[in-house]
Length: 365
Image 1: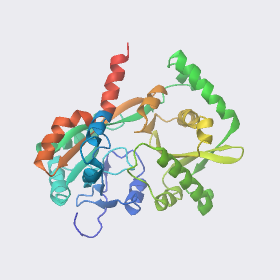
Image 2: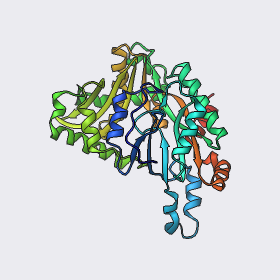
Image 3: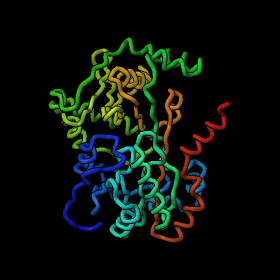
Image 4: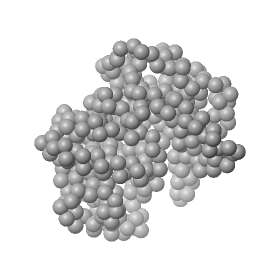
């Protein structure tokens, strides 16, 4: 990473499902211990320490942890890593129409000092993107392979087409046992008040309200299995007060107290689900995950949107709720040739979402 003056994002970015302003807020207020940057071509990127076992399957993590003196050398598994992409966009963002080989050469040249270079979340025949974006993504994956990167299957991005007439119509497509279970959980809605507040509303001018929202985000972060990108208070302050982004916050109250919130964005013909905050144990007691899922689908249907994009995490429960999935790839280039060789040999251990999806297909009659 050089010490050049800050650069501007490319005027047009491929693969952008979110408002551009969200990426700008990421660059201005990166997660804790991240250094956000823009490359010469206008590609957003960041540098952070990365636990190399973050996406490894349980057997590999267990084997590594059992090695002699693990507690003393395990810090070596958290190298400084340059990522091409952001943690606030579903996909890596590329300058539109840029040459794939030129981009990969640029990324390698300017970030060769880092032990690892990862192009994260490259789309793979995404139904959420147009033909040009998918073609460029494939060209970049091919160029990365030629440049010595190892391609790994990425996470499962959940989405739902809004092709149903009502909640009952949607649930009718699920198995009878799932319909019964979800309907039972949705009874918790009767005890809730649900408000829809646009980002930039006067409600978010009150610092106490923003602090409440941030504290609930931190509760969710603390519950997560992976602690990679802890977003800052300054980031949420900026996002929640941005009236231009098309953001809508669904606020869930029980007995007058906020027990959860969900920030989504209306982008084109999609509702893009980005962030949540939950108060535990009240959110679990109110089945807020299930309630908010169905509320988002109903909101998208009422607005005449074409799809709901539900993010990367919890593919099992999202599948249970009726989601479809589209996958990405990560292009990973360790600086060490030895590590590149080892990564190729162990790559299947870092593709847990794809392995899960393949198991699901195998079990489907």
